[in-house]
Length: 180
Image (cartoon, rainbow, N blue to C red; front, side, top):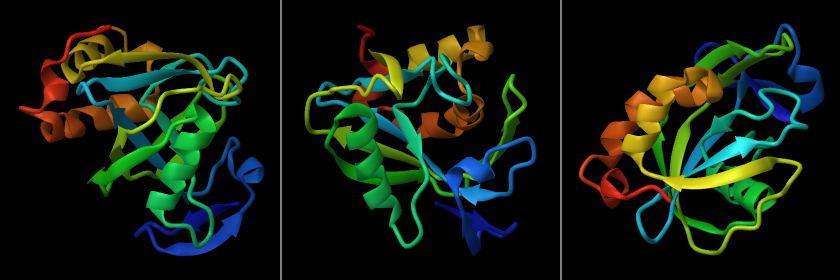
């Protein structure tokens, strides 16, 4: 179940995830999360080819929907474990007011209030192949360059929120880390 929200972001109901995502999608609550490792690298993932929306595109570490009554922190931890087999800590909401509307090539619309989080990886990765096709550790500057050069290869939510997120990494190890 996902939480439906009004134009101000207040909960107005719940609906099944499957019935919400279609050609006309009601506004609902979601989140995106970026993950940093102990070396200061930033994780990006390529969505599995079997995903219903935006299959095969590169995006932030993972995304999800908090369930009714679930805190964002609990939802972030749950999705990190499910999608990446990863334990995360130091979860910070970097962009609390981010939201977007986008339509993928199949015609499915996303319409989400989607706060963006940053978390630290505290375990090894074991990606779920039904969710993640590939992983890559990179830097914020390299990701910014890549999204400008080939925006079609990345999720629309990443393209939209990355410029606002870059300032959260300014001067941090993530900004200067080398790509792997």
